[in-house]
Length: 70
Length: 337
Image (cartoon, helix red, strand yellow):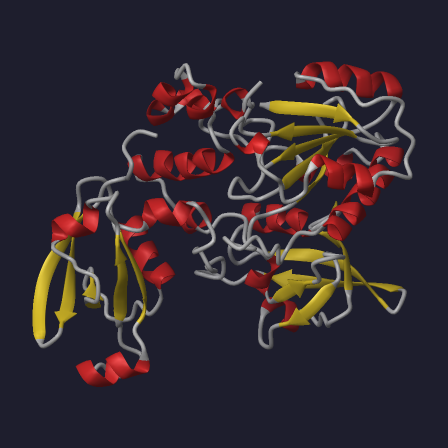
């Protein structure tokens, strides 16, 4: 499963998680990422389920994509 | 979308990873990579950290701010040709991708990495580059800092990095013309580099920029520790070996510099070693006519780079006072995922 989260001012995040692993604590989980990025204003926390959709939004906002595999 | 549907022609990185990131422009242009797995099973993350990721993110944003003026400098970071575009095109993964259970259906990243190795091996195309993929900077003598991984933590004496004049504390800025965001970018460049060539390297020392040349040797410079890679579990022929202790060598009368690999595990789930008659505690003293294979990596490379499916490889084993001549059959395991 790829989860793509627009998290931060500059980057979109797409996480490729196996559905089994998604239930486990990650080496670098979402909470940690949000903590890392807390000083960057995020308009909303929402999820994309396809890369093409995230790329469209990133393009519209002029932001790069960050695609995470674990 | 699961990894099953990930386009391998676009998403290329070290698939044996704990955590890997691709930074991209929405048009698909790759800015850089971050992450590896080298920390091994305890996940002590010797090569990745939140601080390291933060640096990579900041550098990716800097590259994004300069895009597309820097497009030419990024050309070396773009994907390379691949033989298979989607995981389901590997016949041994197809059945898995058709499972109803979502957990069983999921193709893990490392399965793709090992499948690429298997694909080449079955066609007689396997090379050192495939087997020792994405060499860490240590392969050329540079150990990088974990939390700021473009800064050199130590230089191996006599290594290519040492001969290039690099020192601890130097910050590598650009390699082979490519701007770097992390040591995963260095891995990417080393993975694609040809033996015997040289790579131009820009670095900063005490705030001043300098240039040097990193000369890559011929031969086996890519070889490093394979044990943290999931691939190793496919390459191990039903057993794990480790260099025999000095006590074992003395007991068996094996001189220094001669092969002595002790079987410390025979797998229940993989019959290859059991079928050959190998037992835990055996000491392999010769394999494929070689007595100079001193590490598990050297042993595995000898098997997989020199033999194809169905080949039988002779091994000589010491079991106490007995000397046994056995044969390992070369086959990938498991046949299906």
